[in-house]
Amino acid sequence: LEAKLAEFEQTESAIVFPTGYAANVGTLATLISADDTVFCDRLNHASLVDGCRMSGARLRVYRHDQLDILERELKKSRADSPKWIVTDGVFSMDGVVAPLPELCDLAERFGAFVIVDEAHGTGVLGENGRGATELTGTEDRVAGRIGTLSKAVGCLGGFVAGSTTLIDVLRNSARPQMFSTALPPAMCAAACRSLEIIRSEPQRKETLHRLAELL
Image (cartoon, rainbow, N blue to C red; front, side, top):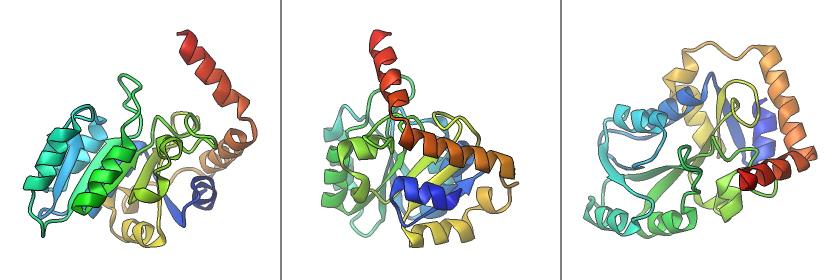
């Protein structure tokens, strides 16, 4: 399943977590340290907020519709402190796509890392269904992409896709992955099949968008 996810996401590697919540909390708490500064969108999912808090880093809240405030906070942050911008790709309560190009511009300007939760974009957005980063052309500009298998994939579990180095760090240090029960083989097989369906039957995604417009 991890190999299939890496292939689907067009990344070097991927790692599976027992849930999407565990993927968010485990990834953020592992990568971000107490000496860092993390910028968390006001409308981020609770699992992202919890992961940011559990990291112990200096937490700054911003709004994706007021990026001037984020820019000001980035300017004020210590130059020698690692900085992280954490955002949903699609905000679950209103369906708005995050301004990822602008966030990546700010990250590159101030030396920050961008982490995107694609829970509500995987299988739904982008030509190949890889989510908001594919839709906005920012896949290669973010440090890591987190996803879930329980939404459009229709199964269970969470995952992170990114560089081999990133995945190796998580595999050896992310406690919610290391010390939790692995997904059942049947669930992994079902998820593998779902990824194939997402790629081979794009009409399902097109139907979803038509229904969303109708609603």
